[in-house]
Image 1: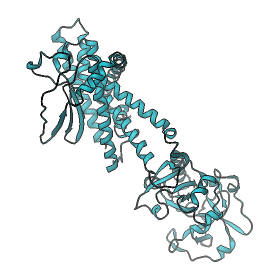
Image 2 (image 1 turned 180 degrees about the vertical axis):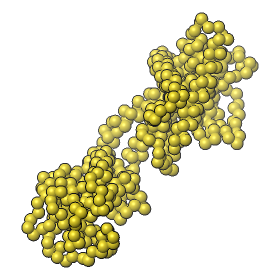
Image 3 (image 1 turned 45 degrees about the vertical axis):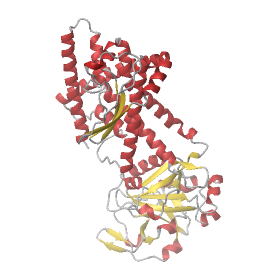
Amino acid sequence: MEGRRVRRSGRGQSNQTLLPLRARRLSNTISCWYCDFKFSMLNEPLFLFGRRHSRYLRSWFAMGVGFSLAALLGVTLILLWELGRILHPYNEESQFINLLSGSLFGFSSGLSGLTISVADIGYLCISTIISVSVHELGHALAAASEGIQMEYIAVFLAVLFPGALVAFNHEILQALPKSAALRIYCAGIWHNAGLCAVCAISLFILPLILYPVYIHGERPMVLNVASTSPLSRYLSPNDVIHSVDGIRINTVQEWLQIATSLTEQEYQGNYSAFKSSSGKGYCVPNSLLEKRIHVQLRGNETTCPNDLIAFVATSCPELKFSGDWQMENIYCLYAKDILKLEKCGDGWTKSSDNRSSCLCSQEESCLAPVLLPGVAWVEITYLRPFMPGCYQFQRTHFLDDKNSDFGDKGCFQSFVFIGDVESLLDSVHMTSYQPRWPTKFGAQFPNVLEKLLMFVFHVSLTLALLNSLPVYFLDGESILELLLQYLRFLSPRKRRVALKCCLLGGTFITTLIIFRVFVSF
């Protein structure tokens, strides 16, 4: 994503001084795989700023030298470790591949099933421009603090990858002391590390930054629901999730934690022809059961007409089907008719005390839904804050009171999701932020800002890692070349040979690792 930042000038420019000079007319490059745009309007402002604050900038970039050298040593050791893994492979997954892929794409676990949307591509491009600009700004300010003005800034597009570079006169850089040159070459990596720190701190204090306009941690709000999802019949953008299976939800993280626990529950236990939904039952009045609807039996499966759900009368507390279940114990009911009923079964123990009992009254029977293995029964209660009178109710009431007047007006509503919990997570996109005022304008802003900060963090970390590698055409090449000059016991020829061997080996191993990352997709 970046080219070499030092443009090697011809001999005709070897007489340049350290004073700022006006660049000659610049010519842009256009080809079938590469195009760039060069400009020099920022040369003087950056140079004057660097010279005015040179004392502080040199101290700042001196810290960057220590960080960059530690990063160069660290990634070199990792490359040698990965080379050993390639020569002596075993089944454990490569940690460096996980780190590289995680930092680049924002995923810390396996790469299988990774999908990138069009919006993610936009975030990736914007974060790349920001990260590369900060990187190059570091080189420009470090050079200005040493009395060197850049020749031009170039923004380029190589194939499909955007990037930028700053060009300096090579002879002037060669004439600098090695410590000053190191500060210039290490400045980009140091600035990328600083950008990562800024993004991490911003993400941590983002609720405080947005506090005057947005509420955080008081139930997640729906941003989007996939049109192909069955949830689109119930949920709409700006709906607020109140509870899942009676458990209050405050943030998106809590939503994900509960969904994960539900997934584990639904894939455990008895894998017979039928099973109950993790001990979740309802106390159904016997008067409703007397109006039974005919249940059809096809092989080992029960079928109910239309949108009816099959329920079975069970003996609490187990709520599990036995092998001698009988047809007269199966009932077809509407899910919406039983959501307001008292709950029974051990699956509701986390919700509240009055729902954890398995006992129903004499006029009621404990019924549990009939589900196939791996299918979840999830009861979701949500609030529509933008309905008349509902927003103020949301701000002043936090009880799950679906039988109140506001519940009758449609503020609180409930539905049951029957299916794979993973598909539930994939089809609903939510945020932990809500606008403080009843307006739909700006509801997406916290999510956009949060996602942009995450992408900038990952891309900036990737640039810092890549430029720390001892490979051709990146900062690691120039840093390594300067480090070898400190080895006075080696002749210039041996230093050139050592540099070439290190760069060839580092480039080969890095190319092999990156190839493995993309092949694993």
